[in-house]
Length: 260
Image 1 (tube, rainbow, N blue to C red):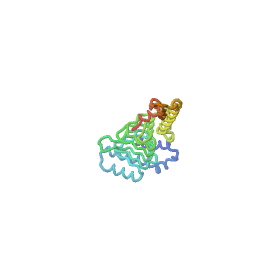
Image 2 (cartoon, rainbow, N blue to C red; image 1 turned 30 degrees about the vertical axis):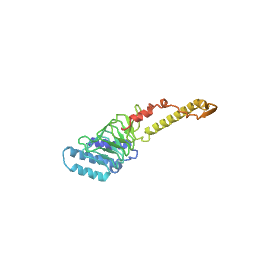
Image 3 (cartoon, one colour; image 1 turned 90 degrees about the vertical axis):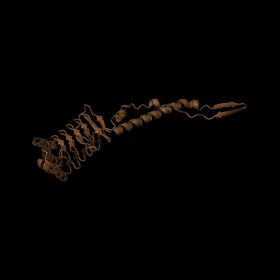
Image 4 (tube, rainbow, N blue to C red; image 1 turned 60 degrees about the horizontal axis):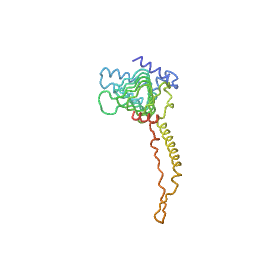
């Protein structure tokens, strides 16, 4: 436990530029204080001691605003930044050197028994306000964007954004875990692609109308005895369904990632 606490202490200086000295970190960082209380509670919980671990965890919640069930398993070097409103469930597992921001919930989805909370791999970043729910697996080096809702497994080395969360792969791209402004916007990409597709279809329809307009402008005359009647020109229609191909890569990736 001592080695884990030392790792929790050191990681703050690596990931928070506001950390200036050890006294400030020790007394002014509720994330570190919550982890200290939790490691004590978890040890008592593992020994089967009733009530006392829960009482200590509730006292920690009152002091820090961070609620961690004594049964949760948290690795070393975990940094809970700011931390207000963080909730970590009983069967949740948080891997080494993960980074959790304020408002994050690692919770369940119902009253099922057994393992009902998520498992986070190593070096996972969970953005502010994100909800990771259910007995799901979050791979190593995953980044979850702020405000995302994750309900299904996420493979390693990718980014999840949106509600519901959608997977955006970042293979071969090394991204600083603190760069939350450098997240892809899958919704904007798809909307822009659809707008471009509509503009292309409108252009094709206009070209088809120009091709048939000379023929459609010719009057249709019908002779009946000594009288001649002019029929109204029928409306021009064009079929462009074949040009509306939704197999575009960006759109297809958006649909494939729906519901993650």
